[in-house]
Amino acid sequence: MAKKFYITTAIDYVNGRPHIGHAYEKIITDIIARWKRLKGFDVYFLTGTDENAQKNAQAVKEKGVKSKDFVAKNSKEFEKLCEELNLSNDDFIKTTDSKHVKVAQAIFKKIFDKGDIYKKKYSGLYCLGCEAFLTERDLVEGKCPEHNKAPKIVEEENYFFKLSKYEKEILRLVSSKDFIIPEGFRKEIVNRIKQDGLKDISVSRPGLSWGIDVPNDKKHKIYVWIDALSNYISALGYPSGVKFKKYWPADVHVIGKGINWFHSVIWPGLLISAGVKLPKKIWVHGYLTFNGQKISKSLGNAINPSEIISKYGVDPTRYVLIKDIPFNQDGDFSEEALKDRNNNELANDLGNLVSRTLTLCEKYPYCGNDDGLFKSLNLVKIGNYFDSFEIHLALEEIWKFVRASNKYINDKEPWKNEDCREVVLYNLLEALRVISVLLSPFIPETCEKINKQLGVKAGDLKTVKFGLVKKYNVKREGVLFKKI
Ligand code: ME8
Image 1 (cartoon, rainbow, N blue to C red):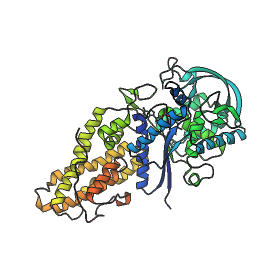
Image 2: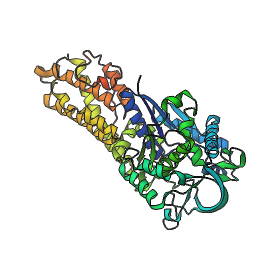
Image 3: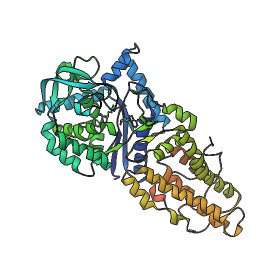
Image 4: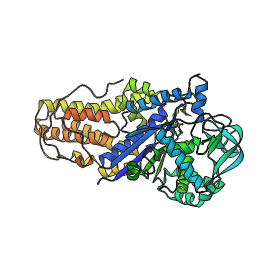
């Protein structure tokens, strides 16, 4: 039986339309999901929307429509984005789904029954952007640095979760090098716990009109982060669903750096208390910036990914986001970079290689043995980069083979060099077939087109070797990438 692999993105707030930062997270998750499928894993890939947040409801007031309709309409935009991005997600969860609501309440109740939830009067600084209470230490010049706004002073009676009770276990968990990657983001969490310790956290808000009711106390809504985090198990049918039994614990939660604490500390705390197994890994990514500033709905500098995709195509969009955002840092998004990479890398390197090879193969016969071209393909290295989630390096390593193939065709000149033509063309066809398998996690639409022109079916990792396909059914069809 194939080994299972469960991977998730964060679920997005629906207080506005999706922006390119959301697209980025979904793409990198999709790449890992597709890679694991190539390796033969039984993959479950979940994404969705976080619909019960107060800030979603707040956004409605400004527009004068019903919360329910507003949230449903925006959620559709995120679902549409998944299609536009050509994501291979297996499910799309919405936290207003009744199936989710029941699970969020069941978890709250389980933790309550365990004696880990109590009521107390509380005063704190609430940042609506984060949907979280902040401490003075979190603020920069009195403002939340994520959202550039001063938090509101809130005084209310809340239910509290005894997070402090689990400090030792959580510290042990985050101290393991495997749990939070990359290392810089792991250290941040470890240092914060060591410095401040873990305090109990508020897990309900009184008097809100939007959200999930606390079980047996309709005056309170479940704090949206508790509700949101539980999506990762509600989507699988916790506690008794077949999918839950098969796929939980998650192999990777993919998230942005601003919500690391919720995933690496609070989520494990809740799960330990509820007696549920812990996720295996939190993969934290940096932010997409625009002129150096975080792209966000709250900051009002959002770039609409749908527009970028319809202007330049899905694969150039996916490609540039991987190339320009390093593993553990922020990266600037720019249309100029997209155009450059489309023209110089996708069209010149890959597009030309495919078009030149296929033009020749339509004219001349091809067959022969390994001519040394495959020496420049290092599958072990590529696999290692994927395993350590350094997908931009995996892409770079695959691209070395694309460049080597271009150099090979230039050096051998099969269009005029009859002596070696048959062998060179066969080696190039095999290279294209293998390139198409390896690039399929990154630019799946293009790889489908390459396969169609080669007359082969999409292969998995076992097919990444020379000499597997003897006979091609070559049929050239238009250019892969238009120059912009
Ligand atoms: O945080 N670049 O929702 P969200 C890259 N609902 N990633 C970005 C980004 C940017 N400029 N801006 C946001 C939430 N993200 C919660 C999550 S999960 C149980 C609940 C990332 O819509 C962000 O870090 O603000 C997060 O991982 C995801 O997009 C959704 O952000």
